[in-house]
Length: 239
Image (cartoon, rainbow, N blue to C red; front, side, top):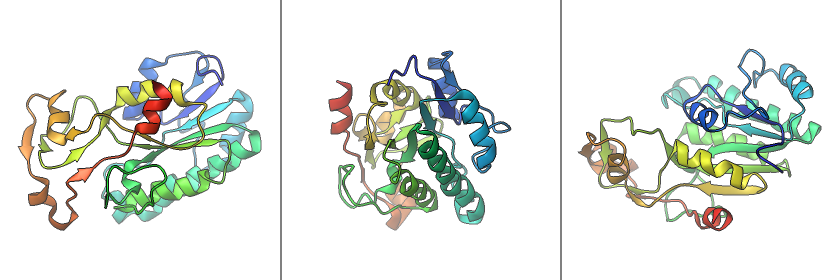
């Protein structure tokens, strides 16, 4: 497949990652439909749009994410968008023979060990991650698909404080977006992350005013010092 020539539909173009992706790839072959013309809970409307565009690839980055609390207080919204909506896309992509690239999250891993490989067992740490894993379950049934378990953050780092006692391998939105053309031919599951370092050191690269905070003090029993995904496969593909 050719990222720069084949027709691509990208969902979530108005989101924060989508805005970065859109600024990097303002190409005539990439389409960023608005919700009114491509509502992922309206399968008939989506099918009509896809039949009109006839894409070879669909990148599904649209999701209900923040505030994280919503996945606890309004599970109907979480399920309808992240699980049922994704399942609708799987049905259409399978029917219309479209390659599906699905944005999942590193938080499907339990972080009981590290670094977490694509073949490791999963155990989501919260309802948001469960909703993304629900989407993954449908995508796994579509052979022509790629699941991206992504560990990413906005740039610049938006929070006032960052953990000094958590070691992770976040990547910024722009870094993740630049990987996409290089991995579109892959199938299965692929971890995407960045350099392993403390969250504070990561944040400091784009936010010089960020303050040091302790995860152990704030999170208590929910604290994991090492939150690292194995990106060896990604490095081999993109070298």
